[in-house]
Structures are given as C-alpha cells and as structure tokens.
Image (cartoon, rainbow, N blue to C red; front, top):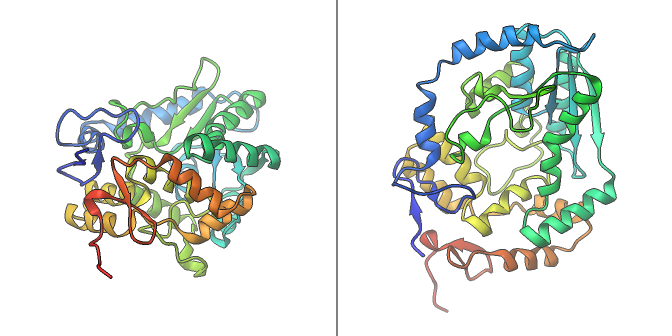
Length: 341
C-alpha cells in the first residue's frame, strides 16, 4: 500500500475515517485556507446578541462542558469577557484515570476565577470499565462510549435545567478535514437546545486557546514537573488525567497517526513548524505509547498490559505498519534501519 502524505503539512492521507483523498493536499490544510475567508467578527457580534435573546434559565446564561483544560478556559473566558455571560453552569465529565496535579488545579481554577457552579458527573465506575474494555476489544477505541457521552450528557443536563445554550470548543470535524464547512451548531442541536462550537465563532488554534488559558490561570504539566510524557510534542493538551491519552494513541495502529501527527501538522498550518520539522517529529515520536498512560489505563479498566498488547496486534493495520526488532508497531515509510547480529 502506498502511503500518501499531504504536500503542505506532511499528514498521512486517506487513512482517517470519513476522509476522501482527491488531490495532494489534506482536508485540514484546505479548511485552514477556508477559515481565512470567514467573517469571524460578524459571527462574534451575532453570538453576543444570540446569547441575550436565548437566556431561558432564571440563573444560568449557558452551560459549558469542561475538562479544565486550555479549551475550557478559553471558552469560559471569552463567554464572560467578550459575550457578556455572567452566570455559567459548568459540567465536568470525569473519567476513571489518575488525575494530574495540573488537571486538578485547572478545574478548580476555572470555577473559582469565574465564580461558576459546577456539576461533576461520574458514570457508574463498573459501566465505565466494561464499556472501555468493550471498545478496546472491538474497535481499539477504549473511550468510544465515554467520548460519545462527553457531548450527549451535558446536552441532556442542559435540557433538564431548561438551559438553551451549550458550548464546546473546536469543530474537530472541520479542523481535521472531515467536514467541508465550519458549522456553528453541533448536529445534536434541536429547536429547544443549541450546542455551539466556540471555535466556529473565534478562529480556533491551539496557541490561541493556550494563550487565553494562561491569562486565566491555566497551568501545564511543566508547572508541577509531574509527568514527562513520551509520544507527545507538548505538555499542555490532554493533561487532565494520565490514562486518557491512550485512547488518542490507539489511532496509530489503525490509521498510522496519533497525537504527534495531529499537533505537528497543525503547527505547520499555524506557521510554528516547517513541514520537514513536523515529519521529523512524526517519524521519531508518533509511534510511542507513553508507558505511564498505558499502565494507568490498564489499571483503571482492570486488564493486563499483555491483554492490551494483544488487542493492539489484533487491530494493527499491516498495510501501513510493521513491527520493529523490539516489537513496536512502526509506519513502513518511517521504519528504522535494520541491524545485523
């Protein structure tokens, strides 16, 4: 199988679900150019008025689903400072993994700084474990069920409270090239309740979110020097709990990319890295699964690391990958040199 990469950013093409390759530039790069033609100022003015017209709860202006991360800080900060929201209900969907010091600080900081009520929603732990094991075995996606609930449960809570507006961060389908248009409303939206992507109102970028978050008191992993992650380019995304990033890494055996590819190629589109630099990072680090994260996920869902490895081998895409001398799945186009005995 020929492995095709975007000529602009270096992202592997044609393996991400719901994407079709029609040229030599990936959908994410095409959409990055489309964003330059969108009148975001008009969208921002529209949102301020829309919020005023759609406050239906006697206390809360809106509901925001939060992890406590940089995007959570960016959303709440902008809703308060740019769009006039005074009372926001936060809903945190907690997982069963080990929480980081940074993650605990950030979640507390968000509620305290903006004086928000917060609901922490924890699913039945046994259900979480069963669904994670099921997702791992069937699809090599241990958090398939949980991530589906990340959108649906806050939306359902908003309906029960009579809150009409729910906010999330980026429109990931558009940002990663699976959708052609930067839609403002999530497909869950209905006549009574709207789920809005703030990343469709303010042009989304990782560094923009990070800068907003730091202004609001966000701390990354480096602040506590608590976890030197492997297989990652930075220490400020997906940092709330340790085991969570395994679900992101699980894209690699199936599709030939994970978080390093996602971040490195976005940095190319944002002018932070060159394509050559991004490909260097991808070749060296994209295949690496952080051992602390792997142990934490296995502990949390009651499986052995050997069982996890068996699931990986079962789903590994052998058209894209082969095992190196140490038993690690690596992309064939970045495969390391072979050494004789």
